[in-house]
Length: 422
Image (tube, rainbow, N blue to C red; front, side):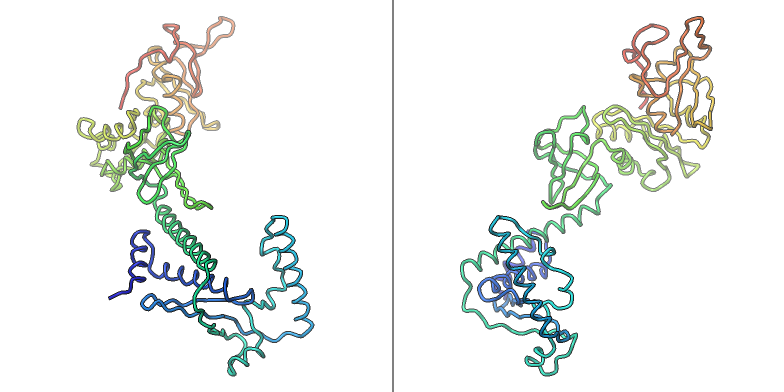
């Protein structure tokens, strides 16, 4: 039957998700720190061995055997150590902390009295010692540790276990970077929303929140893992509801043909919460890419739209021909003709008068998304209208911007109704 101590260690492992050996190493490090507090000095390089079955502890001073150094070098080293001690005391007096790397110069690489022992001294302890050996000298067993030593051990255990837990959480979620997870809204702190994603909480910043969504405590939703980093306060997991990757992953989850590679997402343009245009193509002649994405009676696409809080999604067919691709991207507007300007990578699309506002979209959204989707700068012109400065007529040309008024009704374009294709 295992001891009470071992049972406690295994319980900690189960609760924190830690390895048994990792917890045991933490306890040994704490015991070494406690021994140094009560019985050691600054020249001791202590390591502890702990037996969880019996509760026994053995402490060793571990040093590497190096070549002898001269008396002059020893005296110079003692002077340097005295100077370091004086610097520490002076810094402590004014409340400053001097980093150890500042106090340790290049000379430490030659001989460090904490971790090294000269071969002549090592032979006194072990006659067969030679340069390169590691000597482990067992220290006397203490009767018991004092209160301060016990507090030191407790702090070491708490810190080491917290660091180990943070490392495990970081490694776990680092593997989920760029994926979609299901989370539950915990609470709001200012403009930041904390989302429970399992072993920890992710952060949904203001720029990653959809404007048309309200995040109430207890709400469940899918979130995109945008970035995972490890800071001084532990792992920081940044989530997003506005990232284009969320739409890509939802298509991958909800549409089997996309997950299996039969349908490929070629390009995607998104204005989160409002509209997304996605271009797809089929790697199988027997599979219709648009039909596969929409599903029977729109069931597949509706599932994705519901997850995105009603965001409109236009699924268009990708084409290697730039004119066809631009024509598809400007849907639902009907395009009369398209002229390409290869050197500027821009295109001029001619549309009928009744299709002009539809091609541009409310607030210029349709042409803006189409330009982002295709990678071409798009200019929309009314078919048959020619710009003549002397006659005072205006060429209705846009480059992904907002049309001020409709040429037929003289009303603002963003007040016009337009058919929706989902």
